[in-house]
Structures are given as structure tokens and as C-alpha cells.
Length: 394
Image: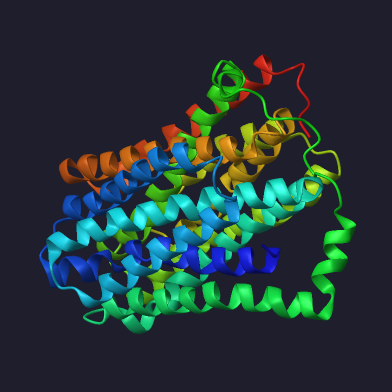
């Protein structure tokens, strides 16, 4: 797998993952789904991820991670194209479950493949991979503007087509590079395994309190990340009464902040920055930013606070993957599985809880209450630091 293929695929994977938030009002209008029904689409998506997790436990040692990634794109593309073709509301839930299967395989396979194949460059490539996800999420709001209203199904179909092109072009590009000798030069420069230690027994990781608690941080963070990406645009459109362009901007600003954070974290880590300190301070400031975003009707302050929320918390995933793969360099596949498993729980639970709270109050209040997840993450990171004093950080 060439990094460029992984990065470009992850960009449009992010677009597909963030379609729902900006399109929720249009989906509700055309299908009759309620806000909580729309939240159940996210839940079914995470159920699909759980199915993929169970399957991956059987396949983890039998397939290359790049193969796992390609299988995931196959599931995702099928779900996206069928979402654009069906008008059956019940089938939408099934397709979002298939979407979740593909999303898990893509996320875990790509992270594990990059970390394992380019171990010495993991502090650069993993943040860059997640920067590409953020960049795709940034573009989503504006890419969807032509599809707002009754044309929302076309957005799903076209993203599926683009991902198909990338999936088919990847092997073609690799063959061309090999023909030109480029692939051979890179392979020669990487003779020998990049991972210097054998894999630890899975029980070793599961018995490590620091690893378990750090993985819990991912559950909290992934839950509130999806919560913000899905419901902030809905909050801006329905409760602040803003038009579609401003709704798209609210999603874009969240991901701009996240993207900048992920773009700079690699150089920061390579220049001696402390991951635990960055994460702890970032989580606290992200929580405060989310509170500010839901306390004022001033649109400039709302968008600024949303941007800061994404910025202060955005590097959580790449730092987790870099730090834990430094602890256990032979276990990158299991670390990626753990990251997705924990994140799946968070994404299944917290966005749905936000809709339940919002049903009895408002989305603004629900988002404000949800900021506690950032503060809990900060506490957990301090706990991880104390439990892992003797471990290398990077």
C-alpha cells in the first residue's frame, strides 16, 4: 500500500462518514424520520462496526491489513450507492449497518498498515492520515451544498463512485510505479522489519491498566467527536435559524480546527512535545469551547468556539496510536482494533444519548452537557500518565 492511496482514500472516507449531519434536516423532511430516529442511523452504523470487530478477531492474523482496508472499502461503496438508490426507510438502517462494517475495516486496516509498514515514520504518517480525514470532513459541508433538499441521495451515490475510482486506481498506480522502478527503490530502502519487537500476547495489553484507560479516552473522544460533527450543524440550522451555507460552515470550522491540530502534532512530537500534557490541556480547553459555543447567539463567537473545540481535541487519536504503538510496537493490528472497538462504543452511545437529552430540552443544552466527556477524558489522561511513568512515550 502506497501512503498516497491511503491518504486519498481516507479523505473521501471522511466525506462519507460526515454526510449525515448536514443532511439530517433534508432526510427528516423527505422520509418523515424524527430527530431520535435519525440518531438511530448512527447507532445501526456502530452495530455494523461491532459485527466487523467480531469478524476481525478471526481474520486479524490471516489477512494483510491493506487487504482488510480494501474489503472495507467494498462494503462502504456498496452501502453508499444503495443509499442513493433506495427510498425504503427500513433499508436505510440496514445500509448504515453495512456502512459501519466497512468503516471499521477501513479505519483499523489503514491505521495498522501504515503503522506497521512505516513504523519509523509513524509520528508523521499517522497524524497526516488523520489530517486527511479532517480535510475530507472540512470539505463535506460545502460539497453537499448542491445536494441540500430533495437531492440528498445523490450525495451518497457520488461519494461511492469516487471511492470506487480510488480503489481501482490504487493497484494501477502501484504497477506503474513498479514498472518505473520507484516501488523497488522504496522497498530496498526498507529492507528488514520496521517493527523491532515481537508481538506481545493480547492478554498483556488487556492486563495493562494504562492501555485500558487510554483506550477508554478514545471511547469518550470518538463519541463526542461524532456527536459534535453530527449535531452541531443541526443545532446551527434548527435552533439558531441559520441558512444552509452557515450550517455547512459550522461543520467546516469544527474540522478546520481538528485538521490544524492533526497537521502540527507530528512536528510537535518529533521536536519533543509531551503527548500527555498536550492532550490533558487540550481536552479541558475543548470542553470549555463547546460550552461557549452553545451559550451565545453571536454567530462569530459560535463559529470561533466550534473551531477551537476541534483544534484543542483534534490530535487525540494520532497521539493515542503513536504512544501505544511505542509501548507495544509488535501489536499495531490489535491496537488499531482496540481503538476502533472503543471508539465504536462511544459513537454508538453518546450521540444517541445527546438526542434523548435534546428531545426533552434542546440540542444546545444537550451539547453543553456533553462537554463533560472532554473533562472526563482529561482526568483519564492524567491517570494514564501516572500508571505509565516507566514506559516510553515516543
